[in-house]
Amino acid sequence: MNPIAKILLDMKYVVSGSDIKENVYTLRLKDLGATIYYGHNESNIRLADLVVISSAIKKDNVEYQAAMEKHIPIIKRAELLAMIMEEYKKKIAISGTHGKTTVTSFISHYLSSIGEEPTYVIGSPIKNVNLASQYGKKDFFVAEADESDRSFLFLKPNILVITNIEEEHLDQFENLEDILDTFSKFIERVPEEDSVLIVNGDNDNIKRLNYHGRKVITYGLENDNTVQATNIQYDKHKISYDVTINKKKVAEQISLNIPGIYNVENSLVVFAVAHYFKLSLSQVSKSFLNFDGAMRRFHKIGEADGIVVYDDYAHHPTEIKCTLAAAKSYGKRVIAIFQPHRYSRFSAFYHRFEEALSEADFIIITDVYAAGEDNVSGLTSASLSKLFPANKVRYVQKVSDISQIAVGLIQKNDLVITLGAGDITHVSKEIYQHLKSIFEDENKNS
Image 1 (cartoon, helix red, strand yellow):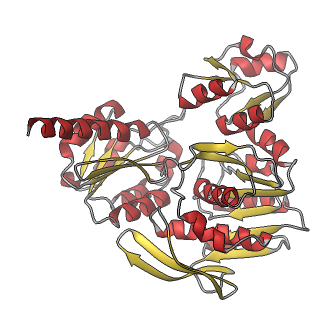
Image 2: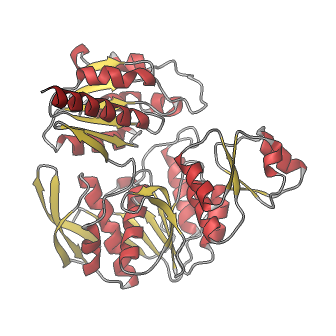
Image 3: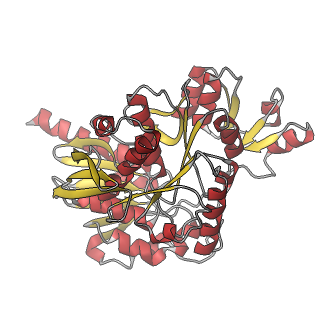
């Protein structure tokens, strides 16, 4: 909600909002002129002409009920996003199970670098500018399109990116077929003329979609893609590669600031966008030179005496596996600190989490961040921890206890990474501060 609220403030709307407690985002919105309430109360919406709700708000919410009684229009976040998007000529929506935030950040950063002044709305801030949204005054609107509650079906982009598709959000979808059907419905929302689908041509599930006759640009590592990464070279965590479009080389020896072969794939979307709009292809790779990704996506928290601490939003087995592979490429011992997110996901992918986490050298697992769900399956983080060798894992029930325990397990030159979509992100900062103070004290005493 925060990124859209910022856009509305930039558009000179009067904005107010409610949150459970004060945080960096509410403070920033307050500084920009929004009225912020902490806690939910029916009086909070007394001056509202429109109430916008996130997917977390239930119908028994006191403000929702008050808006209903006062006949104040209530819409979902994605409906508002669609209303704003409709005002722009070049509407780009980035969808997919994984990689949406990074790809949206890549595109927004590139368009900004060539002076296109895009309006963008992203799920997490771009590190370079520490902004998750920006109000531009030209033709481009770039938005991350969330499939988790099907609300992306409100959007009507003329450029639709699909990064990948696999089973996820099984609390909302019956199965993979239901997910594929929903993405096919999203494709139908794309106008037949002056539009394009930019899709990952390496993803088997995307290949199963009905494109409904829309123009398609594919990207990926395989030879039959429109946009392809070629001549891929690995030097520890650094990857260099060339890019071809329709088999013609358009860039060579590109090296990203963010690790992982998955980010090579993500970067290809920018070339596809530039190609479709006939924008500068040479500027694409130049824009990568000062692109450091999005917050909570392999986000470096800090380094203390050779020990590096990262934080990542990965909460699906595929994301965890890719993130840990990138971490391992640094040649360090990797300690993964994992907080499962939602019992529905945890039970659906229980043994896949076991496989994904096996990439780490040592694992700390804490209790599931329930996000309001009940544990129907009976599976727990404690039971998951028992699937690993005893010398490779530590179960820590409380998040508040992790940092102190982790510091006692960390060795010189380790790479430590927190993984999860809940409140585990705070642990990475606590660990770094703890390590920093230890080594500062040692240096003072030496």
